Image 1 (cartoon, rainbow, N blue to C red):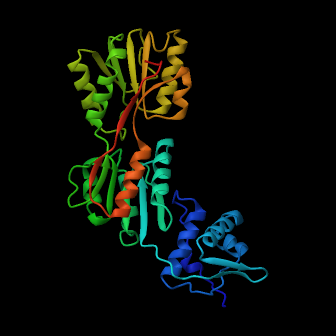
Image 2: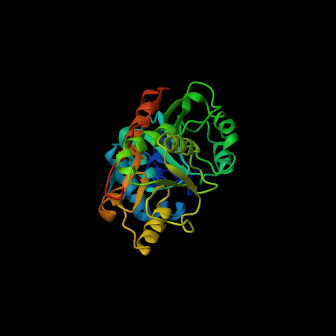
Image 3: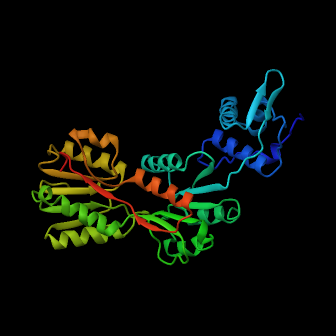
Length: 343
């Protein structure tokens, strides 16, 4: 057995949202697959890797335990860790690009990883709704992954997003959440139908909404939220003869009895609830609230907040199966209304 100084082929990306122990595991597996690390090679010690890569000893130890569970690594007391099996095949290497981190994205990502199962390397990166960051990130990574799973939400430059996305080989591309006009070729997609989803959800809630005369959609300006939400909201209000208004800033919006609010952002939801309570109005009777995106906390706040939400667990599972099957289907993800006392 020989000592392998393989730091050049063992990398940690500080900008990746993938846990470092998973990055380290995948990096070592890739080095074995590429032949840089061979059977019977001794890996650097936990302390050495920790110092060189500037990561914690716990992270290295967790990665090494992961490799031992996979049957790749073994240890000899006093001699260190060595490779016992170099027959590694990581055929699937997935780059996951999310616009931002949130509770709902975590649900989606956890579901995606669980459905992918073992033997698949997945790296998560966040581009903060910035098309330039997104473009620069893709520039040198198209040949390093078998698949790219992308949520394409941008605050600026949306009209040019398809040009950047079209540079990805279509057999590698899975679009999540939102369809982008202009993307060509045979690619996979798991999407929400934003216009019809909100229309159908409000239609399902029509009996509860009938006690309110005005519907207000809190839609932040210069945001990444799809404009199709507005189209569905306007169409519903016009069809069912509700007075309606688009609200950009809930902090300064007058609030009166007989109004129901549809809220997209968590921060705005907190402000809305606080202001209604300060006015002494009763939520669910004098003022109604509907919040986008289901979460456990909304089941208990104020005895329950009514939500309209896509099924993020389902979205992750479908995306993982598209990767594994190398499918190019376009699949609409379910959307649900959960009626609770806030309406």
